[in-house]
Structure formats: C-alpha cells, structure tokens
Image (cartoon, rainbow, N blue to C red):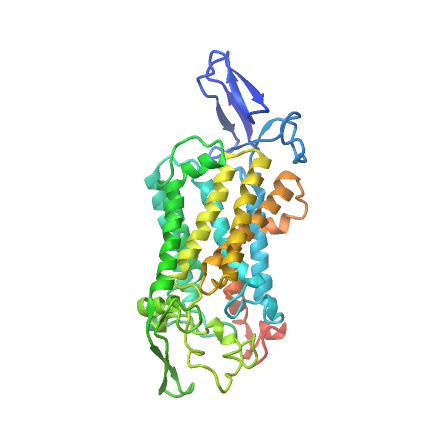
Length: 481
C-alpha cells in the first residue's frame, strides 16, 4: 500500500481549504511556491499518478449532494487499489454497461427484433452501442493526456495504439475467420473487408488523440465559456468534420451503378444487377453518397456482404429478420454495403470529440454540481437538436451515421454517463458495480471473444468423430448441419 506526503517548499507556507473557491489556498511567505505531492510506495517500479479530488466541506455549496464514501468534509487524495493512476469509477462502469448492452443485443436481437439494429432509418437499443464506445474513448483521452511530459512521445504512442487496433480489426473482421459452423479460415486479399468496428474506433481515436495532444490552449479555465475558449481549435475541427460530412452527403452526385452476384453457390457464372440512381442527397439504401464513396475508394468487393437493409420489408419476406427475397424486390437488395464506411466514420469522429469535451469537464472542474450541470446542458441540446433534425427529414440512421443519429446517441451517452457518475462517484452506490467494472476494464478482450465469435470458433474446434458433433452443438448453440 502506498502513502501520500504533502511537502512544502518553505516551512512557513501553510495550506487553507477555501470552500467558496473550492480550492486549496497557499498562505504565508512561501505562498508563491506551489506545494508538491509525492507518492511513497513500497513498489519502487510503480509510477503512480494521483487525482486530487476536492469534495464538499460543511459550508460548501455542494452541501445538498450526499457525501461519497471516505468524504470527511475537505479535500482528499484517491489512488487506485492496484497502485496505478487514480480514475473515476464511473468511466469503467459506463464502459461495462456498454459491453453488457453489446452482449445482450448480440444474442437477444435475433429473438426480439425490436432491439436489434434498425434495418435502415430509426434507432433501436442495439444502435446505441457503437456511439457509447466512441463517447467513452473521447472521455478517456481527455484524462489520459491531461499531463503530457512530451507531445512527440504521446503522438508516437497514440499512432502505435491506433495501428494495433487497425491490424486487429482487419484480422477479426476482415473475413479471416469464417464464423460458427465453419472450421476453415483464411481470406482472399482481393475480397478482404477493409473497414470494421475496431477500424472505426482506431480512426476516431487517432484523430481525437492528435487534436488533444496538439490543439489546445493554455488559458485558465474557471467557467464553461473559458473551457470552450481553451479548446476552441478542437471545436473548430469538429465543426469542419461535420461540415465535410454534410457537404459530401448532400452535394455529391450518385450515378447509376452495378454489381455482380453468382448465379448459385457451385456456379462460376455471375448475374449483373443495375441500380438506377442519378440523384443528390438521397438517404435511401441504394443511392446515398456513403455507399458510393465506399464503392469508389474501397471497392464493392471489399464491403460488408450481408447488408443491414437485407432485413427491410423491400428485401425480406421475414422482415425485420433476414429471409428470402420478395418477388418484387428491388435490384439493390443483395448489394454489399459497409455499416462502418469511410464517410460515415466522419460523424463517428465527432462523437469522439464530444466525449473529449465531457472529459475536459472532469479535468477542469472538481465540484460535483458544476460537472453535472456542464454535462446536462450539452446532452439536452444534442438530443433536442437530433430529434428536431429527424422530424425535419434528416432521419436518424445508424448505417449512414447521420447528423441526427450522432446528436441523439451522443446526447444519450452524456445522460447515461451523468447518471452513472452521480450514482457511483457522488452518492457512493458501488456494491452492484463489481461485475460491470470488470467488464469495463476488459472491454476489448470481451469484444474479441464474444462479439467477434472467437470464443465459439475456438470451442467448436473440439468435436467427437465429426465436426458437427462439437461442444457448441452439445450445448444447443447452432443446429447441426
């Protein structure tokens, strides 16, 4: 266990807690010399970082908020049990809730279509998972880069981490594994899927990290306005990314296009389908700019083959589930479409920027009430703006990652994060958080094993005499072939 020692630069300097300013005041002859905090620990190799968390005093304006555990009316220091950097528990709990939601919709979505991903326009429970992950990535970045000894070193580490996520995403979602009921593996490079969930997170993380490292001011923050001024370059970047998405989405001309589908599984002959477009600003499945950019840049053979609109009424007799094509199905029903495409990833980056703003509030404001107020205002504005845009015709769409979808989901993430923060870090209700905390700290591992079907693929490798008699079949996961 480590201990903490407060060392003054001069003996006649003294500290006083000012409840009105919510800060520690240094008085005496040594008041111009800032005191420093040292960590004394039995582990000589650990590099601990403390978070100074000022809780309410008996006369603090936060007296209406309940005390958190260990609060004695003044400032106190917190350190993680593992001896590492202190962190808000609500970060891990929020991430754990998102992982639990991901697992729930992954396995319950097929049973209850209402919570599965929307076939096109509209938002369901499953459509909140990706934005929640991107939001908490932004929050974590603000905390990770609040103290940087060297910007170049931080830049190199961010690039390295993003590359690892990109490579991992290509390996897991590029088609190398063939899924449940198939013991083969490998992917044709000519048909590998370039984009995916981890790739989108990597791109958003990298751009947000670069902005957090290089694009922020040094002015003092004591209000919401000064916070915006300190990070005005980042907000300018977010506005430019949003403007680029909207201008391309509504301004690009989408011409007619075609694709090929094999006549049957055993045949090498292909049937050519032609999709008539010739429009601008269309938000339907066939003629939107998101799909056109992916087809032009990535190539249609590198897109996700099982498009989400295959579950729509136009393309499935079993809608909202996948099923046989109706007799009057349009020509685009079997065309590939990537839900994590290039243009739609621009708005995913903006979600990460919004998470950065919420993290900046944690860094610069220590008062519980101020934090909550600073979170609730943008959350309310985002949801209201998103709903208004949806009602005016800019429909919320997860596959296109439309502007209204970004606003609604990012605002909802802000509301949920605020609620978790109040329950866990303000009111101290932590007895129910053990499992969620573990899931939050191991989110990537759980995603790889569960959502990417790596665990089922590994389990089905153990079978009795025939591959069909594997462990998954024995426990009722997937029928026999």
